[in-house]
Image (cartoon, rainbow, N blue to C red; front, side, top):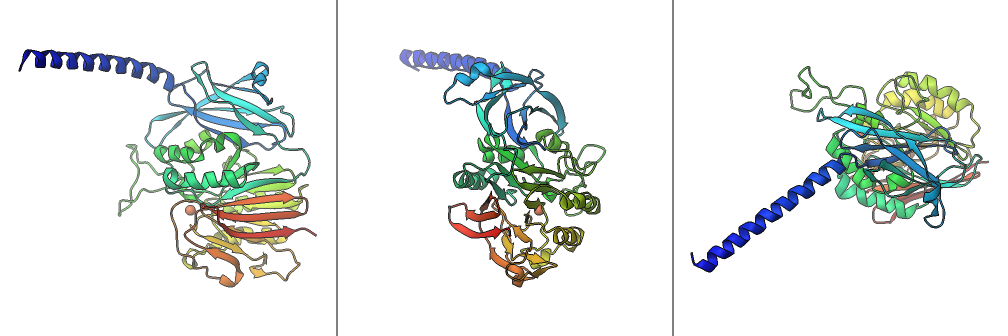
Length: 425
Ligand SMILES: [Fe+2]
């Protein structure tokens, strides 16, 4: 090696050492901050959406000083001077990895109806950006929401696109209703992808998640390992994982033991009922009847995961149909929104599993899907269907204005898949 080569190699070595020291310092600083940096921030509705909203988020490590700051929105940034701070309630939940997850939540109450608020979550160790949320009106008033079938697969790769399409389709949506199977497995890595797909939308409009069969927790043996069947497939129990209730802050007005997966709320003239069709159908039917029989809203919409009229002939679910159909018929439910079949099927207005004559009230049943898994479209009762389609990632905008409900189903490329209107007499 020549003298100049030796000098060059020493210089290179010194640069590498300096770079390593600098990187290590940066990493150390970021690790300290990142354990208290909010992520997976999500807005959920309460039972009083005109005067309160719920917020939940995570940090990578313990962060007992988390809070929400909020203020009525202003055209510029002057709202920050009026921001009020509310300390968060913090809790831990065991992840599928058996590590602890750190969750924080706040219900902002005492808000003004029909008012846009700005909020951020975190602490002096790191705040999110300011996000906004619009409270509901106290009386029936026109609004729109978006309904999705199962995200489940291709979360980051493909669901991101349909969520963005929905944002363009309905930038004013009051809430996003997601009809179960948020992920394929309730695993932390997939849940992170689900939130990546949701992006800023989850922080700027209410999200109404519904529990599907893929959202159910795995069974663990005494050693803490997931129980496998003979084919090596992971086995599930009947319960949602602890991360469900930790990650969402939802109404607790359902059947005891099914809090935050069975609930109802009223939004500007619509009674929205969410059922957990995985378990305890009879209990939920008993709970459901008085809530359908008497309520002050013009419209009744029910959402759960398993369809009463499947898009696949080998997927007919008579148990769920027998549990709920008599009540939907008796109390003239308008719209039933479901998922599970990885296809699209929208029924004609039905009563007693028969299409009603034109002009009579019937219930419209929809199956939809937004993820990258697709099943064949083979309904066992095609005569009951007004529209079927397959191999589409879809979102549905549902607009309510007085006695009229307008529905449009749009694919990820923006093309219209289906549309119809319902008119109250
Ligand atoms: Fe499913």
